[in-house]
Length: 306
Image (cartoon, rainbow, N blue to C red; front, side):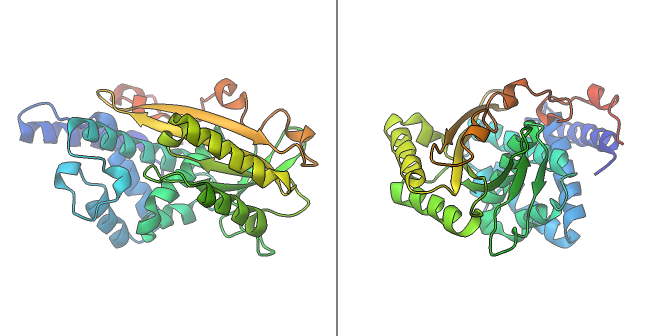
């Protein structure tokens, strides 16, 4: 998508018209209007216009106008806190779509957001995983159709020491209850069906915030991961993370917690000692990633649409 500056001007106009109709300041920020327009434009470029606009009208409208079958990811209640979370998730989705649009073959994931409504949240969380990989600034290749040979890992990440990490991304939605057997099945499926043998394989797992906040759950999760690694060398590492939104006016604050568990039985243990994400997310320059939550009309006037 080009012409972000032009889209920003349109967002300013939309906000002004909304406030004129309301007769007061709109609860929706400039960043929200900009993000709404960016989502529409990028998803329209990725798939049939009619399908995109049906999805927008059903799943991305404000909470006070929502249909009964709205996507839960964008809905968490009908109070002011829910409104802030809704606005922030719209902004986050636009930021992901905009910043990842140059990743080769990413359009197939964008189409899946609209085409697979039951898996909408999982697809958005997959994009969150790609954000983490992109922010390490390590070279990577996204493998959307599977890796061949019956394998279906999502990414190949190329470490500076020459190691290629074959990365499978998994997620547990925010409403998921913790189950040791469920996590074990997830790891076993990745090990047996998705990661390649005799290569460096890793799993990037997004977990709900309440899993991490509960020390017993966190301990049980670590135990399941350690057991999965005990008799296997195909999983060289499991990286699990929480990226949570907390409602703060005028928009939510995002927090990130990440843990890398290396498999001491893996022949690639020494190659991974420096970590895949460790120290890279905090120290890497972020100038290539445009944060939508802090964009203003003034900043966009200086933006290079090329």
